Length: 166
Image (cartoon, rainbow, N blue to C red; front, side, top):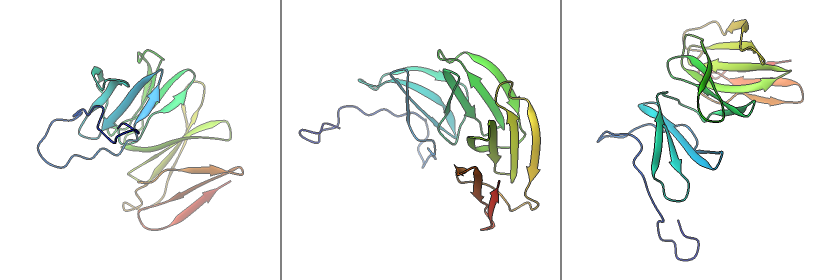
């Protein structure tokens, strides 16, 4: 949108379909490109000035990617944690079995949450799974973003239970 007159500079449809489509991932600017994804469609790379679709990446995501080692980490709705280099070439993929809802760094490790109520702790160099913690109930989905601060990790489950790890 133009700040001067409020006119739309460009718009782009990123997912096909005639009904409401969830686009839960926040748009991300990376390497002077705009990335956006949807649960029902692939990640789309757009030219930030024109909105032209440059390419699609065949991953369905529900949250914005995380910058990782000059590249990106994607958490997919299929449960894959995908490490891409700066040119979006896949370096490694690890399946964690359930829709990844959040990715954070905590105490030198990588932590993911999922909609099945599991926290996964991974080695931040190799992405090898070190530990999984199931919150104990089928309704303990983690839809929100994990929060890290002052050495602690906090989350709210779908059962309205607050968890804090130190």
